[in-house]
Length: 93
Figure (cartoon, rainbow, N blue to C red):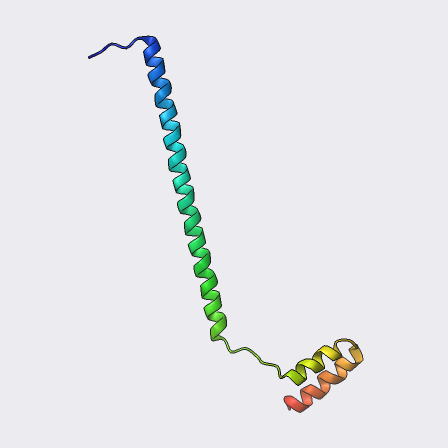
């Protein structure tokens, strides 16, 4: 058993504090990286699930002629009202 002097004890204590602080920073950085990876995985899963759901739902398709009429009619509100009435009667009724 060796007896340490006060100066030697202080140096050992300071060295231990430095080692502990570096280890804590390393451990914290590792945990933050793990949490970040988990968040990225969760985000990817969410995006994939929304995309799969989007692909399963049949979407309304508008014929090109109707699409052109809609874009033209948006210029003039009176034409839009007239177009919506004629479109409704010719395609729905």
